[in-house]
Image 1 (tube, rainbow, N blue to C red):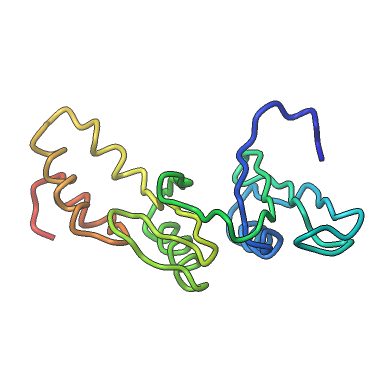
Image 2 (spheres, helix red, strand yellow):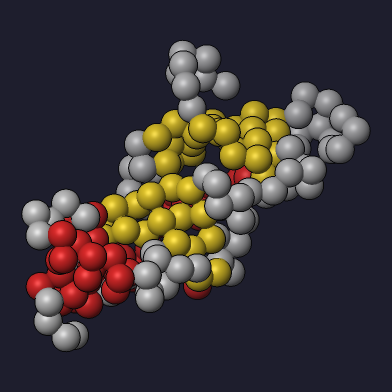
Length: 164
């Protein structure tokens, strides 16, 4: 375990942290496994050699995946926000998460098959929130509220006041 990192996110998994982290590393840029800590001996919920902790970097953020067991599950109170540049990138991440046993939610949110929540957020949506025209901001916001995966063209059209 890298003890030089002062602050990192800890995600609790039910014995499947390594599988989740490998998926994240295959899906997101600047994501990689940094290390794996294995049990030095048998313990009440596992055996010697079982994966206890997976250290990883997720899009530049230090994280540990803790195989803590079934006592706790993930919640939408925590999510990763992934800012995308266009519809293609939005689709790629959304489809990877949802297509791998995840589930859709509203307003650009989805959940992976391990229960971790993700906000797949096109920069065009974020930019619409700071539009100097409050009516444009409201139109973009209203359009977003009807969506699951964000449709960049529809957000841009709503912001411009054009029917998509």
